[in-house]
Length: 419
Ligand SMILES: [Zn+2]
Ligand SMILES: [Zn+2]
Image (cartoon, rainbow, N blue to C red; front, side, top):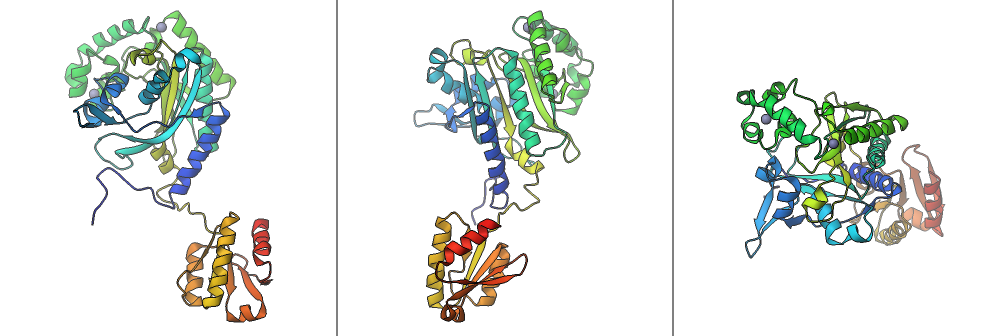
């Protein structure tokens, strides 16, 4: 038997209905907020991610699926979406024609991480990016949208953790303060942090290794190093969140350790299932469009971790199958022919109906109807054919009624639509 590749998975019917529901709610909300869908390839040139994510990150250093093409050029299964969206924004000339753009995209990402429960090497994200707006209103709107999204899905205790990363004006001073703080704690840091501390000290603050977390207790706070403009921007973001009643927490430890991430950074967390879980993250990347070869363009975006969100909402424990409205049980060749015509008619009307295709006994057909958990069963045997009446049974109330074969699909469809 050929099996799944390690770290990959199938999302089966029963679960997928929840995924579809989350996805359709995301689409409606994003489109109401003016975001338009952009569909991107899942493979890009490796260089895009090396420049777009940063060469000294875990993702680029060790987690990318990279393959040479026939000429030996590196191409990579996308480990995240932002770099691709920015690439597309630049490539199609939006910066020149109409720089303010809001895009969203939903799909799989690939990272070669150590497989563990709830983490997959192909995982899914909902991404949204807004270009061309430097105003803190963009930051506020995006966090408000995310808050609406999660509360709309009944995710409880949703809190947005928010911080500012400063700008090229004020961050260098913070960096220096951080480097000098970290320099005498080197022996307590993990090997990745030791190696990166000098080049990228912000990543040390962000490191999930317990020893590193402990070593950076009491580290200087970016909040104390913001320049007046960054302070003003952050203040406006906080006020906007207050005005819209978005629950938030200012979290000076929330960093993204790359130079083109600027100012607002945020993570949406929930305490559902006990532990604190991040279900979305994002922030400003005012420097990235330029880094990837475009004009200097402010931008902000977020990614929702689809897999974790679905798991939090019970995808792995509950069955989200939507039962058919009707099961047709037919006995005998003549009855089955008629039943099949009805089946096609119901399906064409947009009613989910099922039947037995194989001529099984009535008993086994009723079993099948129960397995489907069908709302109603329509029975057509030889007697019913002779009488010109089929029997319609409501499986919840157990009530039965006879329905004339003439005009039957109209009558049954009307009954089902009444509920
Ligand atoms: Zn600044
Ligand atoms: Zn570390």
